[in-house]
Image 1 (tube, helix red, strand yellow):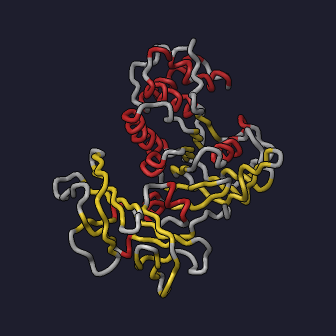
Image 2: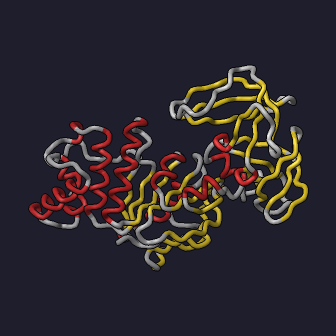
Image 3: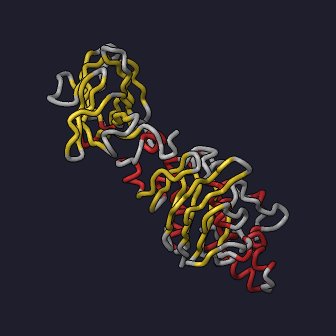
Length: 361
């Protein structure tokens, strides 16, 4: 089984630059947990602190309840898969997989047997004697995973391992990684800037910005119930309107904007600075007539076909650009450019959020 990980008030400084700023999170044993955020937000630094390649400037990293201070990477129950995989090109696949066992003095017969067992686990039957150069990108990913599993880690650390693959293969490998994690019960900690990867594979996601953890929640809650404007903007698309809160009561409020007054969920405090209204395009509706609430007249602009959905751009009478997303299932009527319509949305699907992240940036 996988081990639990705790980051308690963890900071990491590089000179005067604080890369990780007071991060607190508990990752459960056997969980698939992803750190999601833009480049430079501190997520890879967190991974390296867990693996032992970097020591925290402040705070404590615990694995299975034990403080890891002073424990070198080879003394920790972790295995790290790098972005470039770092496979050995002059070794056959089975020797790549069993290299860690060879370092530990395991004899050749047992190493080969373990390699064959792991190849079966990652669905690479018959590849033991192939060279790395003979493998596809997805097969190399599986070899890297098998090699990491060979030393029986309690925690698998993955630093954007799918970023070099094409879209179709990335999508396939998401399902493969998730299936392998479920079969082994090892705790997976995954680093990515790709929201699709994080939402599709993870039990929980931690969204980061500027060294701080903005929100930790299940993927559905990260998407549907973002904690602030940064999370809402980074995970998915939004229509964003500036304005002021009015009549706040019971977790709802009216939001006064230049293009109208809209009812929405109020997240946080009505006195928060920089509050904005966030509505996802798929939660909007286009109709010829105005709705009783949360409706604004618009003129249809560009219509973009995106495969499973159709993106419709529209402009209000005051020049505010809004976007609606229609399912390409044959049921939606796609308006022509120049058509006058009304764009509306339900109050339950709109959120008034603090525009800034918890860094105050």
